Image (tube, rainbow, N blue to C red; front, side, top):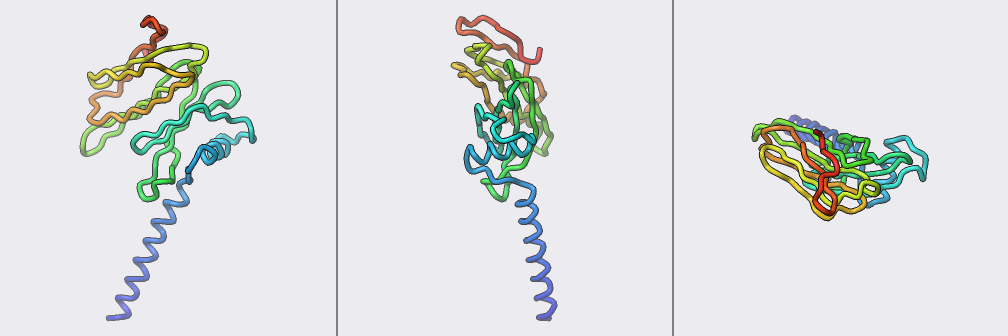
Length: 180
């Protein structure tokens, strides 16, 4: 009986080590801006000095970074590991952030639909003051935009995947549409 219990213990320990090892191997530790910069440089196969991280936002289990690779703003999204909270795995990316763009992802869970919407872009040329968009009948907006726009919205119980809206100047006039 003792031999059987010991064998079960060894198998259980091995399974736990495999589980924890997989979480370490499939993720990267991001503790600061330098770790994030290094990860983006490696992920995009860029040379040192080609990447400039312009904005970072963390919300819920997501970390998003707006970065410049020399000719356009790009977005990279990482998802926090549920076991090791300082480790992240690659989730997705977007490009074309020379104006204000959106990244949209929707998933279904047993609790209903959830939408991840990220508003991002290089606002230095556009000079937008605010934006707004709608999702599932609810309006989301942001005022006082800076040089770079990067905002994460994790919308629970979303009934649709839409993110249509508008970008406004300081006088409240529409500059351009978001996903129209």
